[in-house]
Image (cartoon, rainbow, N blue to C red; front, side, top):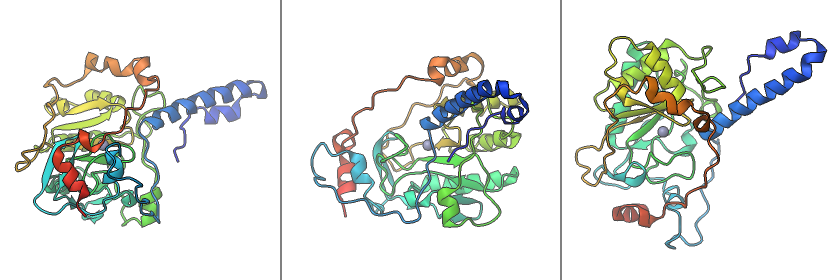
Length: 323
Ligand SMILES: [Zn+2]
């Protein structure tokens, strides 16, 4: 559940009755904006008794969405680790799980079974968690990585398909090992103001900048996606050393977590690299597009047809069909 933040709550109590209606209408508009923002990129609750998905009627039909097949695989494809295809259209062999509790991280929403990745990604997360401790961040809350065999997902992401992407929440780990219920139902921290034009000063801290900088300065990281309001804050708060800013790029949503991407690993010949971000720091006028009304409130887009196995590299068929 996301509670809309509205600055007028106190004022509302003090207003005369004659003004109450106008204030309420304003509050309603504010919460509508907040909700619209969250629809882009929500962090839905998980489940304490996740049921296995029902078997597919016709799994071999060419029209079967690949996400339906990959979502039904709860174990990795054995063998050497390989990221196959692209971040948006691929799969994973030899995936390994990130333990749900580590010395400096905890996996959130474990019922989603998306704490899988290429071993390089797991190593990166371990390293990042340690480095985050050094700047005073009390450990990472880890969101989605990939499914055991990668591939498209039933909800939330188009990328995260080849075990090289991870979402990190904008809240530090609590001091205790969280219960399953806390991990499944705890709400994420939204650091963006309701009007989406900047970070929320009541939530955002300089530690957030430090955390993202720490991730970006890891040589394994090629790209980090954040909400444009966060990018704007990073541009403002970063001092003389701006060499890492080019890796951090604005995208829709990403108000409750940031998305980290590592490159195609050695030994994954079938991995399709993404072009690196441009070398500029991405600040100033480069951000204008993101704050245009048409970008902040885009018209609803037509859903694209779901990816089928024909849209993935041929090996992904073997990987998802293996028992
Ligand atoms: Zn992500």
